[in-house]
Image 1: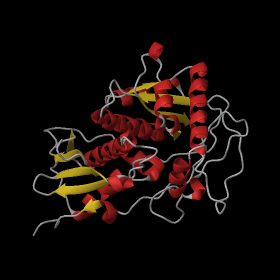
Image 2: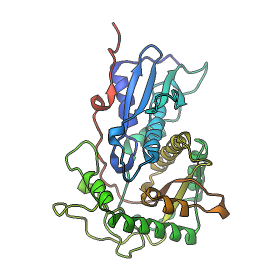
Image 3: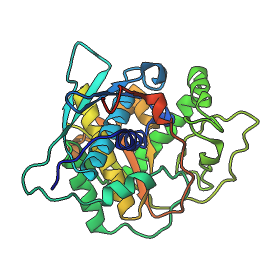
Length: 329
């Protein structure tokens, strides 16, 4: 494999891939900086994009950045590099969450499978109803392996436990409806025509059966919600967790989450993220399942076959990249 080169066009493509990652409320809480001497892309948090009420500890922000790091790895491998990741490389810089060095591939190293790179540009959250078509067992096993390869764990609970998880998610929706600060914060991220946030066209309908709790952004009167719809009666909800609950675990969970989402997309699956219960300390604790060895839950992932939903917008590269003089003279 020939040694890849980095030019301005390729750098833009790498950053665009990173920005395509999911983030809570599509807040896109990241910034990037290139060190041209070491070919290292630094990934920083954007604290002004943190959600102070829904995410006071920054856990969801770290998951979002972890997902962006995974996308950056996939894109770097696509262009011929062997990406080397360091998490929290400078502890004294709390906003510097990761560094991705564009290393040279080893002798005879084969080109990676590009299915994840192709999926990266197609992946999006789908808040619409899924069909009753079952997800093949071998695909679910592959998703479990994808999470494990990034240091996370993905469990697939049985129907009774899934129902309990959905009840906790619905309870979180009720919590938010009773909290004025949370309602205002969620509403502020409904942004038609903006490069961030959730456009009203991407809001999900309510479930006519009442068992699938779709996030209610408490839209203002000017936003007409979609008509109620019937959701799948037996949803597949995966539980993503980590062995511990420190910032490095959150970053690994974000990489595991995006690995699962991209592989699911490559298999033509749709996904939506049920984060509501994780935004309340007592409900997040209640999501633990000691009998199944599940603690420190980081995300709930609804999986299935469904229609193409609208993709949320992304910030342009120039808004998130601190661009050096590149390429140098």
